[in-house]
Length: 401
Image (cartoon, one colour):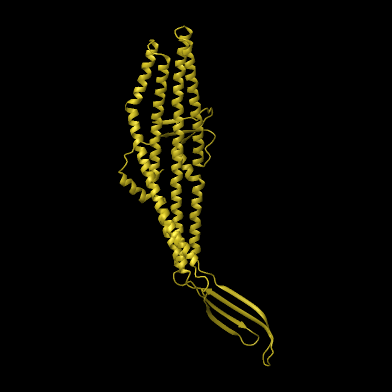
């Protein structure tokens, strides 16, 4: 079924927008994806920082020397020294490992953001199609009510029917027009949400061209669960968050070991130069990094708990979407196998009986409302199944392009 639906009330030529074009625009322009890409660049720069060696320090001093003891001399004194911090043990590997885990987490965050953004675009696109399709159904119902009202007016004018029937037809006509206006309002809102989901200029007036996905043969529930656990980037990110917190714990623990510096220098008094070489070692008397290590341990527990929570959320979302897809499919079968046909036949029978004088106008109006309701329910069931399929694809991390 192909939808080529114009924005309600628009008299200007509208640009055609397909689902693939909307997804491409979002992938190219969405600020969240740009921010995620920038975070990856920042993490790569952080890895460069982690691999850098500490810089040496140079010092130069000058002063004067005077003498009190006979034999000494007075004059200008120069002092030069240089020190090079060392990184011993696991400090450097732990720092690099922490930076690598951060880069991996950033990559999975971008993948999860991309999945979320594209799924949101799909939802908004089909939601806009849903309401624009609803407008077409209600407009067709409006045309039917208008034609019926004109036939009643003719009968009233020739005296075959009472004016009360015309009043009832006018009331039904007003209701049908109000329903169209309400659907147009919902359509405008849905198009605004689509613009926000795409986050790219779409022009003042757009035409949506798209089709519902075909019926899908879903695998067994256990296979779906495994696909969620194996492929969803949020779960991969959560596992990497645990590894990153463990890497931070290793880094904080490695910093407990004092890191020495090699020091060399020369003093040049007016008489005999003095050469020095040695090692400087910080003494961890007061600060043994107990707080930082405790924070890293707590972050590890937090990351593990959040990974379990996200796993449960995704599995619950998948199971809910699976159930909604199955129910929507059953609804479609029910409507398509008999309910829609029964509503159409009921309206034809009521109109024929009204023309023969066997039924009143209320029976015809009731039959029209029943058929309109059935068509709307069938239409919404189609899009409910589509929405459930989008949720399933997002939970399974299926490629949305």
